[in-house]
Image (cartoon, rainbow, N blue to C red; front, side, top):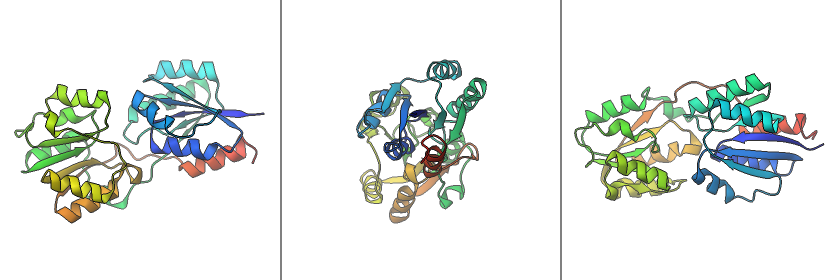
Length: 256
């Protein structure tokens, strides 16, 4: 009998899960929050046993979806900083008695060195330092920097090339000529080129692990002399790697 799972996340981990589960007799429904995440996953060879659904879901909506679909497992492959979504998924799965597995992104050792507790703390530190700033934290928390005395002249947000992200930058007052709308992954060489092209002195990043390109940002800063400002992960998580989740599904659902 073919089993199936419900995957949440438009991350690289979600894409890797889809890839590794393809050979197994497992049906997949993949929930992504945005049209951009939907488009990225569609670039993979999804196959006939994968169905994508799009839209941001709160806990009641997740519970409704679980009642409709009754998956054997829910696989939470959302971003390490998407804490509200993860909390909603945990509670919804508990309420509907659906097994929940969290995929945890391994952290780089350097991420914890001098990491700040929040984006607000990073903004406060940046306000005390001179120079141009490359923001690589996504578009959701760019509001934290608009009170900086040098705003918007010294800020360069690097965001996804989506209409939503660019419009948010403009609405907050970031200069259009400073918005770097680009899709990763970013190599060290590309990061170096951007830091030099825009004469960047400070690079702000989240502690988002290897999948988030942390090592490449760190190396680029060392090569160019730019300072790295790191926002630490909001909480220490327990969970499984992608490979461990696939092994669990092979044994428990696919009988392999």
